[in-house]
Structures are given as structure tokens and as C-alpha cells.
Amino acid sequence: MSGNASNSGEVNPSVSSSVSRSRSKNAPGNRSDIGWKYGFDVNGNGRKVKCNYCSKIVSGGIFRFKHHLAGTREDSEPCASVPDEIKNLMIKVVAEAKNASLKKRKINIGEDEEESENFEGGHKVFGFKGKEKVATTSKGGVQATINQMMKKGYKEEVDAQVAEFFYTSAIPFNVIRNPAFAKMCEMIGKYGVGYKPPSYHDIREKLLKQAVKKTNANLEEYKEEWKKTGCTIM
Image 1: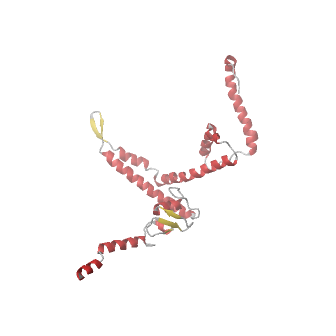
Image 2: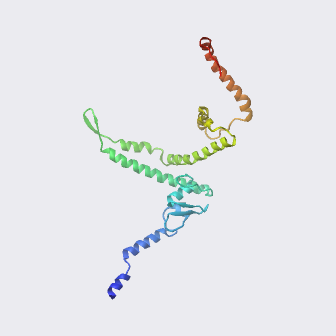
Image 3: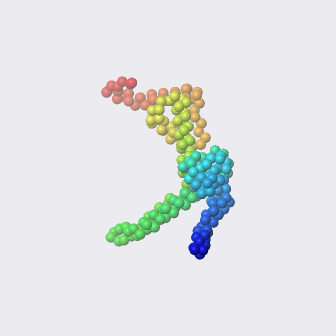
């Protein structure tokens, strides 16, 4: 009995070691991920992180928390108080992680395709299309990944600004279906940063006269045909 009682009170060394390692890993300052420098583990299990800058609690672990700091809007709201240098650092960190993940996935695909056989002129040719794809798609590297991730966040901000313009100007919603609106957005995008919209005077005078002149020039092309077929301008 005493032997059994003694055994029941003993702790399995492997279990004890496992618990110790878990606690050590979850202890503040003992984590290797750089994101933990800027957040606090709320429950001690790494699933909820409290931001040091805005005090928001981000669910989903350190992965989403880093996106919170980077402002990518990937499954988390951007932090409004994070310093620019920390935000830029997190942007680089999450972009490098995503780029490495994509590269690894494409390499795995390339290894599968490497063994596929192509037949040209009756001879077997072993293809290496997968690896060629990896080389081509990885040229942009981390910077291309950063640009792609940040565009997602900017798109939502730009959309919100377009919507605000419609709402505050009482513009009918169907105007957004006007092909001229889509073309306007495209041309502004091509112009790039620094575009300044026309002034009130430009819209009312100069540009209006140019539009009338262009319309009249287009009409001239059809006037000869009207003499034959007839036409009514609505």
C-alpha cells in the first residue's frame, strides 16, 4: 500500500519537463518571435495579445498581432498608435514570412512537376517547369510582397473615401456605373502620387468649353450621314 501510495504521488519526469518547457516558452522575455516585444500575452497561452501602443487585445495569436502593428488589415484592425519605425519593421517581418511561405509552396509544386514527362518528337523530355516558375515569380522578392500586402489596406481606405465623396455630394449611386467614372479612376492611378484635381473655375469654364468643342467635333463626323438617313438628337 505504501509503495502504491508513494508511486501515485510521484510526477512523471517527462510530463514535468514538458510543463516546464511550456511555461518557459510562454514566459515574458523568453519568446523568440519579435512581435512579443510590442505586445503582452493576456492569458499566457499566446492566443490573445494586448498591444503596447493602443491597448487593443488581438485574438488569433502573434501572427495576427504582427499584422495589427503592420496595418495590413489581414484579419486584424490596424494599430492607430504604433510608431512609424515599428510599423515599417513589422511590414518587413510579415512580408518576409509570407514570401518565404509562398516560395516554399512553389518549390514543393516544382518538385512534383519535375518528374512529369513531356513527349516531343517521340522522345521523352523531363520537364522542369515548376522550378522555372519559382525563379520567375520570386524575382520581385520581399518588396513585391510588401507592395501587394499594403495595397490591400490602401484599397479599403480609398474605397471609403470614394464612398464619402458620393454621400457628402448627394451623388446618385448609379453614377459609379458610368464608364467615364471608371476611366477617371484609371487615369488618376496612372498619373500617380501628387495629382491635384481641377479647380472650380477649371470645371466651370476651361474644361467645360473643351468638352463642348470635343462633342461638336464628334458630331461633324456624322453630319454627312444624317443628310442621307436623317437623325434626331435627343
